[in-house]
Length: 399
Image 1 (cartoon, one colour):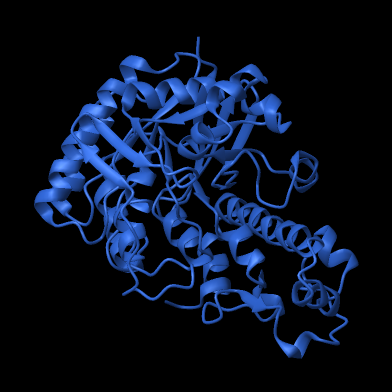
Image 2: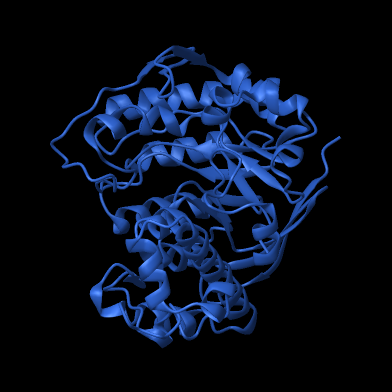
């Protein structure tokens, strides 16, 4: 039997923000919470001891990538993800549906879920091969590792996630592109609904399963998808797919969806900028996942709080590669108490980055993950104390 429960503990009086607890057999998650991503069973540059020291409550791994490397059956024989990566807390897995977009239109046109350009150094005009073939019965993927074609459908996605042994899994879905028109988005949504029912039929009953709401940037489709997915006996709700062509579009999508949901927990897939966190918590989102903290760390961008000069304009980041930090004795963020800021200077971090020393990636990732976890603590306290909007204004200003 499943060991899973979500309880709303407190609601903000001025918004849809809420405090809650997700309970699993491997521990609890205090919400709102930012879930660090461990795509290949590792939060990049960190190990399980680092995650424990940082106080990471849970993480999310990638079904598609782990199925291909090292193989979900290999991971099952080695004790599932928890044994394989040495992490004892709750683990989410996605379904592989996001790769329908990221290896398809996203890769081909170099765009992300809300219309921006993927940060991989290419121009938007530089197209790459579309590695997907999407059909009503499932999705064919061309492996980025060996070029072979692999097929995923709802039943296989559920089997892979069962082998991985995650505590919370996602129903199989098709993540659509901001470039998809109404007719294609509707067709993909219908596929997602069929796959959602199949996922419920085939999933391991010891795992909690979230349904994924699709519908792109089309109000009637989002309403239809919300009503359909919410009518099914999922343990939680996830919001996926294209979120329009900008952040205001994303906010509008949430404003369409959230009022139609019950008290089951709500997860927003693949979103994690600091301003997004505030705006989406305000609209009733409980958990988020995003690769951003470790990805930007590897590229020399380190989080900075408002006390230390972080603003919405600079995305709450400093670029450690700048020559201004060559002899700077200060920590990355003087207001931060992570182990990196407690011991090392900006000058040292810059030296490591410029020298391409591997130590940099770990120290930078520790800082960025710690920063996000402490921000979520502040947001939870803000909701509890009635000061959420005061905290939001401190970080984002009057917007």
